[in-house]
Amino acid sequence: MDLKINREMLPVTEVILDEMQEQSVELDYVLPDYDPDIFRMIGCEIQPTIVTSTTGTDRITYELRADIRVLYCGSGSTLLQCVTQQMTFTRNVELPRPSEDPIVTLRPRTTYANCRAVSPRRLEVRGAVSVAVHVTGDRRQEVIQDVFGMHVQLRKVPVEYAAQKRRAVKHILLNEDVELGASKPPIRSIVRSSVRLGHEEHSILAGKLVAKGEASVQFLYTWQQEDGTNGMEQMQFTVPYSQIVDMAQIDDTYRGSVDAQVIRCDIKPCPGKGGSMDSVQCEIELRLCCTAVKTASIQLVTDAFSTVYPCEQETVSLQIDMPPEPICAALPCSAALQPGDTIPACIHDLHCQVRNINMQLLSDTNRIRVSGMLCCSLLAGDAEGTPMLLEKEEAFEVYTDSDTPVDNAVLQAEVTPTDCTYHLSSDGRISVQATLMLRGCLCPSARHVCLSGLTVDGENKLVRDGDYALKLYYGVEHENVWDIAKRCRTSVGAIMEENDLTNEQLTTAGMLFIPIVQ
Image 1 (cartoon, rainbow, N blue to C red):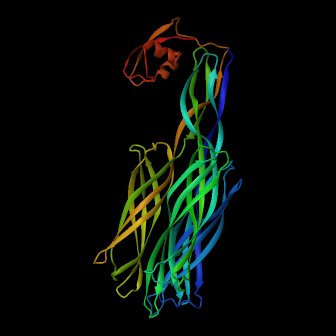
Image 2: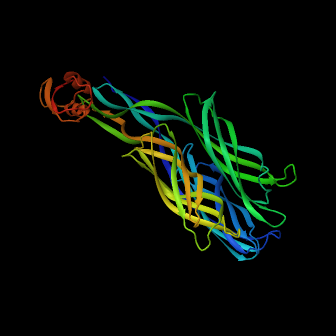
Image 3: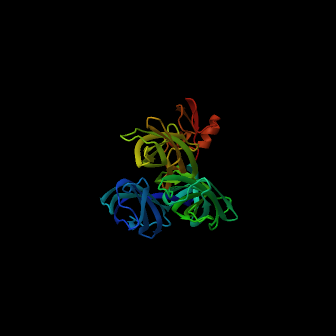
């Protein structure tokens, strides 16, 4: 009988590029005439954002925006002044090799930010931003799915893999007009704003992906009365969104996921019904990165031999991706700040960030370990109302259990602080409690050494060590029946039937009858 081999093309994900790019941020700024002279610097911040990105055959081009915010006080006043500027940079990333439809992930973070007053009318900002660039791509690998003829025995393992992947990106704009309320003073200037995304839901309906969620907006502003008294107030509100994203050829057999990202949040004060600045216009731009995956199953041939003829194998080691599993975990974290020479009398604003995040999958306990630095920035005031910026970085290490096996898996997730609270004691000590949200997906994968080629020498038969139809073999505990069959050049089914075995691995040691088959 001739040898017949059925082959299959499997998609295999490979890492094409994994590197870090650095971008310096330098700003020399002269204050406009309507801003007061610089008397005391409070602090500065650089917030990086990836605005757009395009992927070609050999390179990635992306636009990086750095939002710069500098806080200071003028002479003889406790009113906080805020200088905001934007800088954009266009960067290229050369790909080491072309790939069909690569998946590009760009994660920016602030490396450092410093500012100083060169003169009463001029300030200088020096900082750096790093962008983590991660690129993966799929290639097709031919493997053997089945073999018929020439007394070939096969060892197979069932594998579920991501057979079809669909991706789409949609930009949306959210607009909201919000009134401060009667208890809030009118706005003089907005000092800081932030957006956190939560309560995300998605579903596939009639060939489209429906994404729902909400954007929680928080901003801090300054106010000043006619008598010169001034201060700061916080305001927060929530903007829901619901979007339909067109994704070709998807149905309810696909599993969807959505990665929502904030591109910008513009908040502008505007006059209300009474004519004072007691309302805001908010415009939020979001990027929805949608993915839909359809799975399939295959029996991979991992080993083969012929009971009659000599044969040679060609093997290939494959890392096969399985369907991603969403992950969302709340991780508690804390930090403590000791007072300096000036004891804070009140806290106006608390802002937390995380840096140097390291996520490790612990296969022995099936847990995820997250470590890094919790960076707390508190805008406070002393007894006279003079603003001060208190900053503290504290290392953390937290754990969360995983419902999905983490062995040979890849974690694609982000850690963002949320629900940050503080407690100011009478002696000026400040304790900060933060909840770190781990959001993303766990991409399980399995490495298999499978057959990509098989050659059987049909001209020469294997020579047996004797003419017999049955032999005795002493099997040891946990020995695989396949290894016994291959060693004795017989079939797994024949050994199991002859010895009434129900498991392809021996549970106890003992003597086995080995029937010889052709």
